[in-house]
Image 1 (cartoon, rainbow, N blue to C red):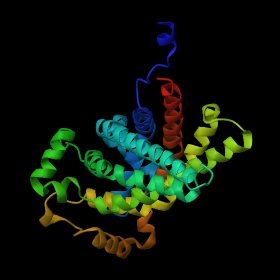
Image 2 (image 1 turned 30 degrees about the horizontal axis):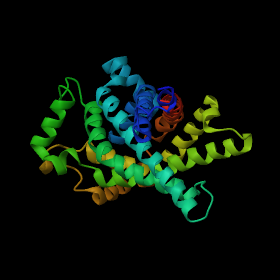
Image 3 (image 1 turned 60 degrees about the horizontal axis):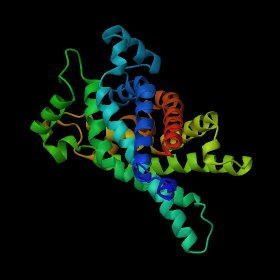
Amino acid sequence: MAELNSLPKAPLLSQGNKDVLSGTVGGIAQVLVGQPLDILKVRLQTSPPGTYTGMLDCATRIVRNEGPLAFYKGTLTPLLGVGACVSIQFGVVEALKRHFSSSNLAAGRAADLSYSQFYLAGGIAGLANSFVAGPVEHIRIRLQTQPSPPLYRGPLDCIRQITARSGLLHGVFRGQMPTFAREFHGMGMYFLTYEALVQRKLANDRITRDQLPGTYAMFAGAMAGYGLWLTAYPADIIKSKLQTDALDPAKRRYTGTLDCIRQTFRADGLKGFFRGLLPTLVRSPFANAATFVAFEWAARNLRNL
C-alpha cells in the first residue's frame, strides 16, 4: 500500500489543455486592456477620409456623442471570441514548438528552435485561429461601428441579420482572405519576436522559463505586438473595410479583396493602408504585454496540475 501511495499521480490536465487554458487567460487580459483603443482603431480605419482629424478627435467625439461606455461597445463578443482565438493560438504554437524540438533532436540537432521554426509555428497557429477570428472580428466591428439608435440588439441579432442578408460564406466569413494573410504573417512575426527575446534572456541569465521576470515578459510581449502590427497592418485595413461594407450584396462598395485594395490605393495612396495605425501602436504594447504576462502566469500555475 505504501508503494502505491508513492507512485506519481497522473496529471489532471494534459499539456495541450494547459496551453489552451493559459491562452484563454491571456486572451481575456488582452481584451480588457485593449478594447477601448481597438474601438478607435476600427473607427479610424473604416470612416470616410476626413471624418476625424486624428485619434484624439475620434475619442473626444465618441465620449461626447455616445458616452464613455461606448469604448466597450461589443465587448462581449471579443471577450468570448478573443479568449477562444488566443487559446487556439497558444495551444497550436506550443504543440508545434514541442514537435519541432523533437524533430530537431531526431535529426541529431539541438532541441532549440530556429527563428524560421518559431515563425512557422506562429504562422500555422494564426491560420488555425483565422477560422474563429474572422467571424468574431466581423461581429465585433459591426457592433463597434453601428450608429445610435443601434442596428443590432446584440451579437446574436447581428449574426442573424448578416446571415439573412448575405449568407454564411459571403456574410459572416466576409474578409476571410485578408484575415488569413494577416494571421499567418502577423502571428509568425508575433511569436518569433516574443520567443527570440525570451530565449535570449533565458540563455544570457541562465534561468529557466519559470524564472522569467514578469517585467521582461511584459517587454517581450510589447515588442511582439509591434512585430505583428508593423508588418501585418495593411491586411487588417482591408479586412475591416470589407467587414463594414453594406450587408446587402447589391449595395456593397467593394466586390472583393482585390477591389478593396485597388479602391483604397486610388483614394488615399499608400497612407490608406495605414489609417488608424497610431491607436493600434498605442494599444499594442499594453494589450500584448498583458496577454503574455497572463499566459506565462497561468502556464506556471497550471504546470503542476
